Length: 245
Length: 301
Image (tube, rainbow over all chains, first blue to last red; front, side):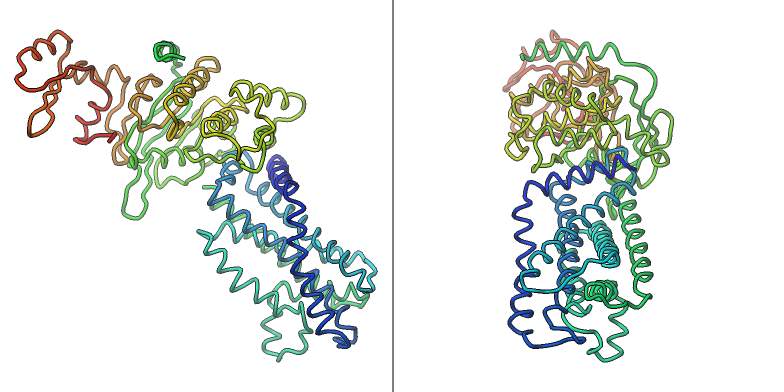
């Protein structure tokens, strides 16, 4: 298993390091825009769940950006599967599907965590209070694990680039907007609240925000996230096994 | 390197094939919808042997290689490496095989050395031995000077050489080459033939090569499997297959088309040429003639 993990990580991190500057810049643009437009422009003087909107928004942006980055490995996997066939090198090698999935998932987590750090660095000059807690980082690790392994699973299940784009369009983007990233879910009518609570993001945003603000969090969220993590990882494993033939 | 040398080297390859089968394929089939791409293919590969899978585009060669290397699940049939079922023990088999796909799957963003390092890690080759192997592979491919260049800057021939030595890095006993020279200039193709023959000679690596180039199969392979519409149409040494047909051909050009008459000896053919009333030509027969005779159509156009 470890040959697979190490091989995948070697490849992904080598490629990443060659375009790290561009990647970091690109991944900081969208959260920065949200920060200025919603946090500064629109949100000044607004409070949400009893805190200034900017403070409310930051953990949401961390969740959004790290989701985008972790899940974003799906697009790279797609290109390496269908366009450059680099993924075949993993499949031909005597490594297990578990090694491949774990390697890719760790890479996705790395990208997600990096973007979280980036947002914290951007947000600090805005004067947002932040006291890092173990719960916050545990939640962030689970959150990135879930969306990285979901990315691996979907990249293996789709048949082409168009399928990948459709999933992003119909599942990922709505989830980001409805999952409590930008506003408190209590504002939604209760049937919709129930529907939204089926999304993993709703739970991870909740824990991230509570930990970020130093509030107590409902103990149900972390176990739910663990279930999602197990489910997504198992799906990714099955999907790679199917591709491996 | 000249043609004569290439042929001589290939001749030596023919003499030292082992007898024990390293790969046995039985009833291998694959359908895509209603199209049977590979139909009940059965053959074996002996240790150190150099076998060609020859057929026109669409004959099922690449599909066969993909099934043999774990990139595609067979529809039916069995694949055994060293007597062990491939689908049940894929990792044991994958340690013994090297694969060069028709489409280059090099990482264009990585350098040659990094591509080789990745392969080494995936195969569990570590430590100081890894660096030596990588340097030796670069030397063997004649790429010492290009080791730190990103692969995106490589020419077609350089890329192909790198893919081949990468597939050999873990010293496999069996090498699959899927159309290794397709799309390359004639001179570069000859260089690659030389490299491939050296692999078969000096490392005793068994090779299964697919090609739709007649000349390639005739020069390199000690045994040829002729594939047509997914089925095995004929099997044997290039010389043996041609012998069954007659080693010399008299081509008679008539208004209604080309007629080919086969002869055992050059003298017979030339004698017949002497009484030709239209435009005629004597030449040695090729595997193309074998294919035409078997299938009624030409392989190359």
